Figure 1 (tube, helix red, strand yellow):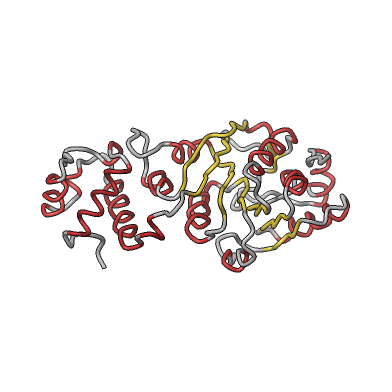
Figure 2: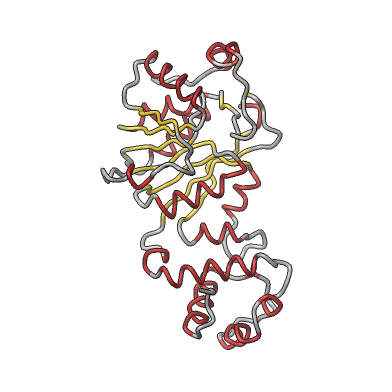
Length: 285
């Protein structure tokens, strides 16, 4: 049975050798084996064959993924951590994990998908680029069927606030076009070394079938433009953000232009974008 990476092992393998965690890379290492196992078990549901781990760090979660998946691809931006993780895998006689030293925002996910394996992405994402990573995986790594990610609680709440919710955001609505979301686990700061200042949550995202980004890329472009434009002025009514011509089109649909973007349901967003596109009032070219 797999075991995680304890505080004492973390000290022995990293900190005693002068390693200092990087804030820029969001290096807070999970040392609670029970939580690591729960995340891995959640990721393995749905009979996925391969896991792609984003930022394995010291490898606590990696150990459990290796136990539950046929193959694991671990992408680590920190060269020293990548070397230490490879050594740990050899030490524990684990041979189904490939560690790649690369930046997830530059990694070629298209090449990683050529073997068509059912895949889930897993990881503790750094807050400053968590939204970028999630959207990159959903929009570019088409073979990734699900994401099970740990993010700061504030980011998780944005992911979980659907269109029409008072806490809805441009990011959350954008993700909602590509995946369904659900809360999995709340994670306290005390289970990390070093401890972050805020709590985290684990969120599961399951890719929707036939997303607009593939079915109708032109409409998708207009829809994203509309979402970002209106949420960029979220405290203002639609009529104060849209042009008079656009407002007239929206009003003709029976959607009051005195509404604010967080009140709009997903079907309304899509209908608005489609009608604006048909009227030649979609995203600027």
